[in-house]
Length: 120
Image (cartoon, rainbow, N blue to C red; front, side):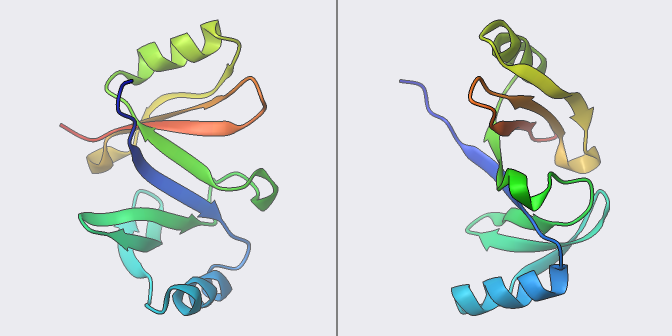
């Protein structure tokens, strides 16, 4: 079986300040902050830096749930395979500047997932 990594996750929120306070209380530690492609981001810190974020801009609605970014070497090829397997491309490969590239697809069960390749 090949190894799969979760490179990133996004939790959509309606009130970022409230969510930052909530997750800080749950985890017993404050969330971090970084400058993201669309402005400041409240992030969950992992062993090697930011691992995920609260999103309130350009993210799926809270009804769609958490968006998981799977590590991927070739986003275009993976999106094509997703489509051939019965999924749909929700967002073609797109640059996120110094953070690399992303793409999104919907699987055969209606789940929205994303792919991520770090910048070289």
